[in-house]
Amino acid sequence: MATTLIGSGSTIRARARRRALAGLLALTLLLAPATAMAHGTIVLGAVTVDPDPPKPGAPLVLTVDLATTAKSPVEGAKLSGTLVPTNRPDAPPLPLTFQEYKEPYGTYRASFDAPPAGAYTLTVRDSTYKNEDATATVALRVGGSASNGSLDFAFPPTNPGSRSVVRWLLWLVGLPLLTGVVVTILVLRSKRDERAGEDG
Image (cartoon, rainbow, N blue to C red):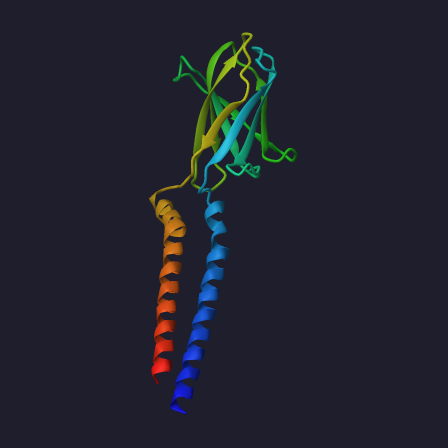
């Protein structure tokens, strides 16, 4: 009779632990996307110009395509930029505002009159998330006969400060570690209860 009671108690505890484990795993899965939403991954970009090469003083359209490393388009980004002569980095920058296009997805365009012929540094800035600022630069040539082609760049993972770095690391490393520790403890306790039930 005593053996039956111990075995029943062990079974109830094992079920409760299994439920707790399932809840923890579900919570992990629900919270995991938050790291991706926090701009914790690299974003790939490509700049194209129209016309190419740009004609000094003529209308120019810069197009930026953003995608994840898995080639999924990145929508809803807040992009801005500046254009500065490469040989005069202290010159007043030409500010650029990019507008998102509905299709194709992940496409942003800025329209303006091309500056004088020469080599320029184009800086693209992503300020989608509050207190975050990702920047990338590419070399752009205005005038001449050589085309610019596709100017590729990458936005690094953005973090607004040390607190966000710690928070991001906790999500990325701490949560899986915590899950592993809890799973190990539950398994060990379950085995110990099973042995206690058999011995009883």
